[in-house]
Length: 265
Image 1 (tube, one colour):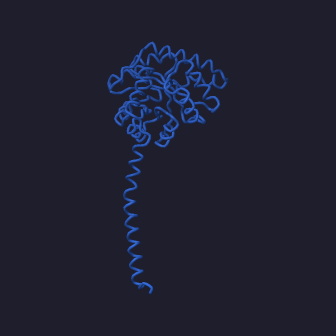
Image 2: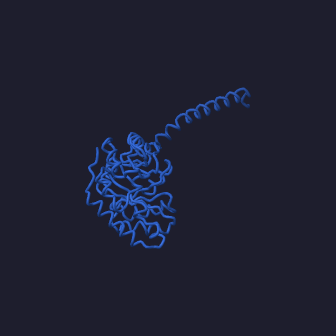
Image 3: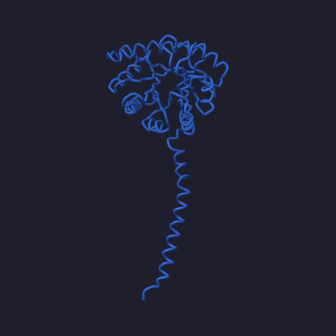
């Protein structure tokens, strides 16, 4: 005999209820599982975090490269390294930036520290870390990127223009603060601010040249970034990479004369 029609209806209703209940439980738990996963991805060790900061304190100068063409990028960066740079930054505004970054990380891992700049959001940061970046640089103060990095023991150096931005970057978890763009007064401005706010570790970039890099460091800067004065656009356009190497030698000599930075722990 066939089962009563009412029994079939009851069975169907019970099955649908179980499925709905399971679906609700899954929808409640999935976000938390995803949040847990996203909070622990790309995490570095505390030892790695300290090693990156120790390298900045020892070397105190970073070569910051932005080129109009992909072809010029590795040649220019190689020249800077040949001239003595041990910390380098590839910027996302350079064509094929992450590919070049990955190549140099593979080539110089453990010798030259490689980072990525012009990071504008956490997705940029994820892509840079996946490519091998050892630190993150932002052009402006982006709390979401700073906090994302801090949660993962990744050193983030955010761009700041004023003492207020510098201290806010520090409070959000940035162990180094990039001074960008340059400010009137240059080294004396850095001395005044670092004296008034001694918890800061300021990294001037714009306004630093081959001759005044050492002056910035002796007036309180933790480290400096070299952009156009190092990577002369005319020299790059002419394929004159020997000039880049000579620029690197000159500025690194000025930086080494000041000595290492005493980290604030």
